[in-house]
Image 1 (spheres, helix red, strand yellow):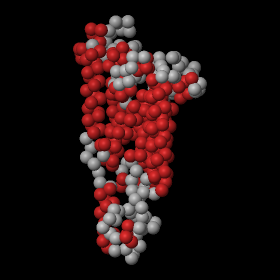
Image 2 (cartoon, rainbow, N blue to C red):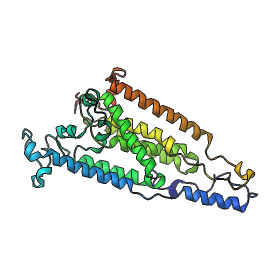
Image 3 (tube, rainbow, N blue to C red):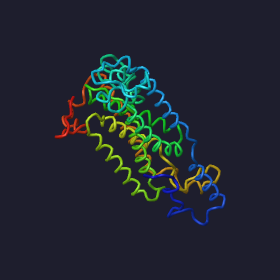
Image 4 (cartoon, rainbow, N blue to C red):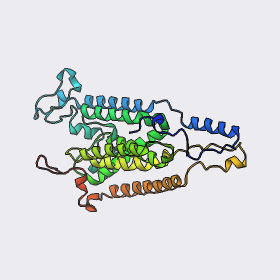
Length: 331
């Protein structure tokens, strides 16, 4: 996985400016490229992490295990925490609240989205977590991936990718899973990783070691999707978030090709040297935009019509859970 611009971005280009170019052109090119490569201050991702933690504490307060637990599964865990102690491990092994509390607080619930018109659950579910283990895992991954993206591209683009990817993951999950609730930021996280892949592809010419970086990203995605076929993991949210982020990366993370500068003040000859973006970048941008809009519209129409996607894909359930002799995949 690329860890910094310095590791990947080229310092030279095979066909750089000719020696006959003016010194003013060379200076402008260097200055503009350095400006493009500057880093943003990171504040959005820490705020997201803080918000997720606060929401989890609020959920545990509402859950109130000592008062509301039925004791069918045993006693509350970490009783010294009082009202925010966890449900019995037999009920929730992730050290968290009951499923009824999560549903009450806005978990992804197909029945309530479709029949009770609670579409807001498509957004609220990405801020909820099933337990401390779930929360810490997702927040560590968010920090690992999100900090670098926000440094490179700023909070507006990262926030857009994160939120829309979570939304896209919720749509796909709701289309395939009707009898279970789902929570977590995993769809949004997969979207950030998907955006890293498309950013590398669309800005291919400005990077070195790009094949190795792309290979590592694909391996990371493949391993995480493979883990998603285990029971109680919403792999459809992962896939939906990944696809959404992948398309958004082509739209939002496009960079000028190496050596381009704004030649408004450099004369006609300099302005004709090189366009800001390569032709393939424009093609990928347009294709991604069309696919993203089409996918969102089609998904939302199917969802609110109450039409399960499984009716059109009899084998797709294996993408989320593969039954073995060690476990089964219930409804």
